Image (tube, rainbow, N blue to C red):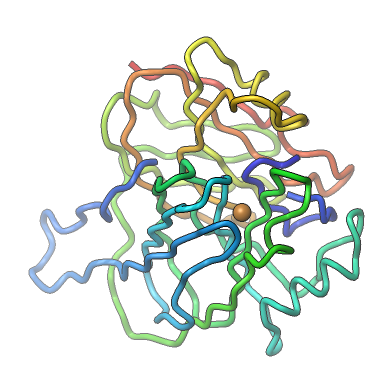
Amino acid sequence: MRWGAACLAIASLAACAKKDAAPADTTAAAPAAAAAPNVVTVTATDYAFDAPAQIPAGVTTFKFINQGKEVHHMALARIDSGKTADDVVAAFKAAGPTGKPPEWIRDAGGPNAPPPGGGESNVTQTLEAGTYALLCFVDIPGKVPHFMKGMAKTLIVTPSTASAPEPTSDLTLTLADYGFNFSAPPSVGRHTVRVENSGPQPHEVLLVQLVPGKTMQDLAAWVANPTGPAPARPMGGTVGIPSGGHVFFDTDLTPGDYGLICFIPDAKDGKSHAEHGMVQQFKVG
Ligand SMILES: [Cu+2]
């Protein structure tokens, strides 16, 4: 029931989603040698990730394309000790629907869900060398998380001397226990949003554009019982980032009603952060 959610931080197997844009131009006044982020394209289908097996460390833009019919995201999870994505899946299976996720995996961002059927989302983040798993925690339809259906893939990030700077942002979105705060009201047009997690718990942000006349309450009800057309369209954002972490995403906003939501299960009671009030609606234009 967690549409586009990540849940590495907590317990549930039932656990736990911009438009396309190029990396922000950071070179306006920079020397000619300023490097650009490494762009890594990942394509999702029902139910698999098409992604490279190995990429270099450094500032990286993940361009995420969903060619499937269902909603997908690409959670990045840092894993240690020679573990693989198969080990992550086995650990979640062993823990069962109400068990804790393995202690050896950590939220590490990744692009949240774009619109299905060819939509794109993106995230730009500084990647440390190490071993990661790409995972889809979305469990619509059927309440079985997609990582159990094949959407789990190991990604090796190799040491690198790449020196691309992080993007320059024009908006900051701060995540807290439990809420969202924009540095300024988002306007129509293109933005590079810096997402910061100021809370003690991991958080994600899924940006959605609401169908005219629908509300975030309608979306919450639909996620709990996804029958009929969805009242909102996923527009990217970032999957879970740890306390103190930050990533960037580019978006292109047209006039309309939008929302922000975090589906990560709470560390204390296992309810989603959305149920704790981490959901916000706003108007653009
Ligand atoms: Cu999925």
